[in-house]
Image (tube, rainbow, N blue to C red; front, side, top):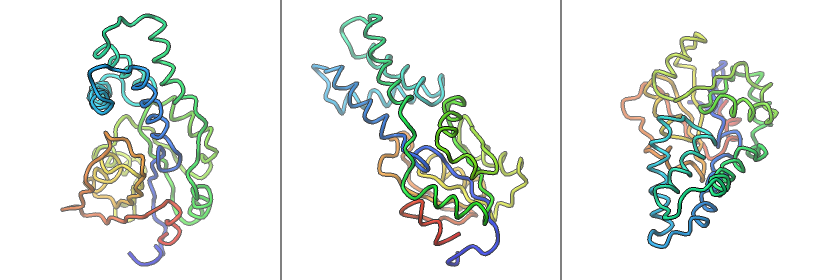
Length: 235
């Protein structure tokens, strides 16, 4: 692609860890939970690996967000602890998840100015996955809602999801880009659906979102940027 896209493009923009910090708060809560569990036989890394497995199983039943995270912490405690799960312990463990849910929205550097620059030039649609109420609350509190022509909160981000969004808004795949920090949810499925993708890596991307970026056989173009603000150099 040239230095700037001359014609208007559609940018589908991820939210968590793309527009604002998210996973870093889960990481802190997990570290506190593992310290609280203080397991005598398993190392911190082993406890984390078990929690990752439990979270993976939990997504299928409970989706994403702090509610699902609380379920996963409780289930991990039950799996690893020798002591019974009393109501007080249950409350303490849920407290780790509540701390995540109630954290103020911390916008990533350069995001508002870049959205302000992009809005008159291109068609911006927010595409986020997760718990509807939780994500809606974050969008409202972020102060970024006005930059977007539309908002899509989806249960999962897979190739059919992107094809549905493309059809719903009658988008031209050749001029539509999915922008995000997750290869598994933002980049690879969008490329597989025939769209272009913009990968903006985040140092704290959730371990369950890790995947190799795979542009092989994709019809779309892949752009890798160091930070969100770099969009101004291309669009």
